[in-house]
Length: 223
Ligand code: CTP
Ligand code: CA
Image: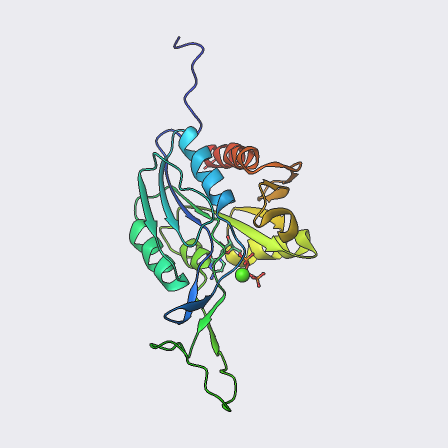
């Protein structure tokens, strides 16, 4: 048995994943979110777990069930809450996979009370202010784990993804076209790293996640 058994590729690794969409409140009942379903994040959580990793998951809004059997799960709805959870959980992690569709902006003039329609008054104006970039913040830390990012693009996917990978300083970036990816059961991605660009076929998010984990394990083995 010893001769034929090879341990799963992420055995002994601690992996922190963000998934789903964030939600930025406008008032107590309304907010700004996006069409991320959480499926790709859940597929990666499953694939990392199947590969033997200890998986912690921070998730926003999801339209899919949470993966069972993870070491730790926590919901963090806003980008600020997600950043705080990630920074708290980061020490001791070997890998950070940033799958969440994090809002780039939050509401500056959020109302503590429900906004009321007022006859004859002008429509409310929502002012935005920029959120911190969770992935870039983590990647810039002196004690950064191996970082895997995503790039959601609607055009010029490869050009934008190449620039994004270098700007954020992440060794592995998964590029996808939003109409092929967000809210869909399948995905079609290109993996970009220091050595190569790997175009994967359109396939289920579970198969895509498995391929990402295989490449991640190869890159980790070279460190
Ligand atoms: N990301 C993040 N925090 C943010 C915004 C993005 O952690 N505030 C992460 C995402 O989880 C993803 C990567 O950064 O892994 C790229 O997100 P994306 O929206 O594609 O790129 P941005 O850098 O936000 O640029 P833009 O939306 O302008 O294309
Ligand atoms: Ca963005």
